[in-house]
Length: 73
Image 1 (cartoon, helix red, strand yellow):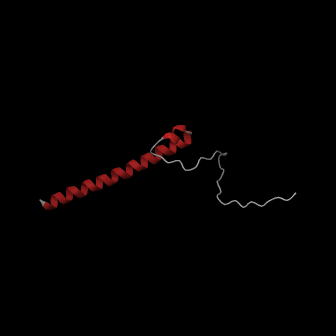
Image 2 (cartoon, one colour):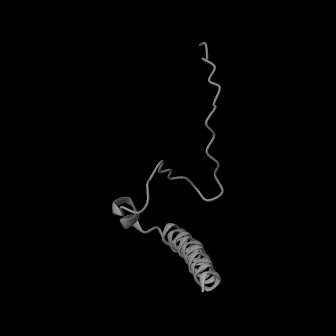
Image 3 (cartoon, one colour):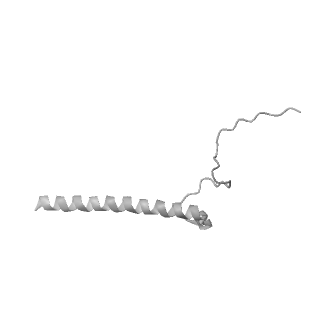
């Protein structure tokens, strides 16, 4: 009896872990689709955190460390 309860608990935990992983994969897939479609409602969505918004041509790269040298006239 005790072994059966342990097995049931292990199966439930396993299903919970698989469910959470599946839900996270679907969530990230849907967010990626929304970003690609340019959904402006992502800015107001409480499930995502917007860190940086960059408007640039496709293929552009953001560079954090830019060395600036003053130009003398």
